[in-house]
Image (cartoon, rainbow, N blue to C red; front, top):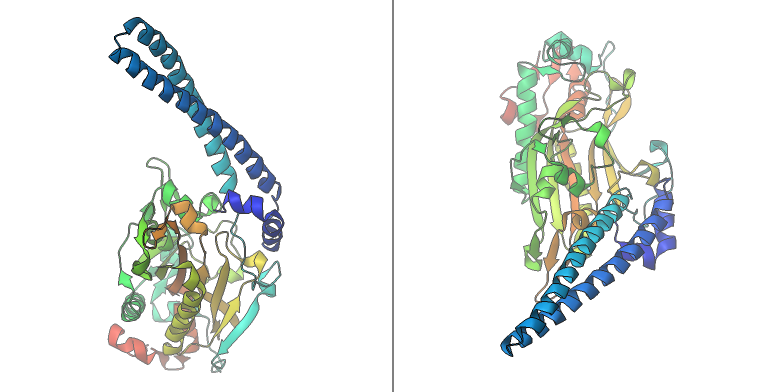
Length: 423
């Protein structure tokens, strides 16, 4: 969440940043400033009432000590009126603060100065390429046909059980899923990440804390009776572990990893681009989350990007790294790198990871701060990355490693799968 102070002090830069993100509701900046003016006025009035009440209380005490009971009672009556006015004023202030919050949570994070201009994925900047495009044999199949051929993922059975976008993994397909999850978690552990297993249902406070709400409310599955949301990513519960927490500067970096299923409604998704594993409503993902000192967050972002790239190299998958343009970034991000693997049978790039720095945007919502020495607590920086999302990794592994005799499992996964071929 943006700070009102920043809106006031650097309004033009804020408007320029929001425009770079193609945010249309620029009038909300003025609304937030105006609402904050009202908040300050109401706060001053409350402070004055409380001050008067405090002075009366002191006078009442003095009169009681002097035995002037009747005079003290008169002031008590006056003070009772003041306290009632203070209560009404406090309620008015809280209402205005809520209105201000509801404006501020609609404003996205500002992009970093290095974020390229642009509106669509076509405007993203390719910053790194690795590996060569695999040459497949004549008659090679897309992964959804390979899944059917080898009976490892059943999309139709998923439709029967739930609906489109909920596949059933079977046999070696299920074991490949488990192998990838364990490989990703072990890799994160070796990199110094602390593994946690969080809930996959969260409350609204958690959704607001990381910026999924109100921005992505329509894309999250909601359980009406209990008012819980199914998580779209482990980022939500893991980062919210530190909601309302004050860290010490020596705690940095705070590094967590988690495997969870993830749930996204993906409303309006249809067509060939969502076939098979390309876009699911439920999928598995291993997430890495860091909380870092503001002076080191961008250095940390590059380290996380390099780490994810290293996993893709170990899987022997050709990939590219993109720096997202302003119009293609997430609501909460200040700078995002996407990693895409090349899917040989589909002849297209598939996003498998996003690594983002949110700077203090999430921390402000979470009230996540740190203290250096005896100084006043200040906001930390938060970062997260997919390391990795499984569906498109599986799609690329199946397609890129297919042969007339079967599908060769990447060598690094064999100790986890217990087999080196799917045939």
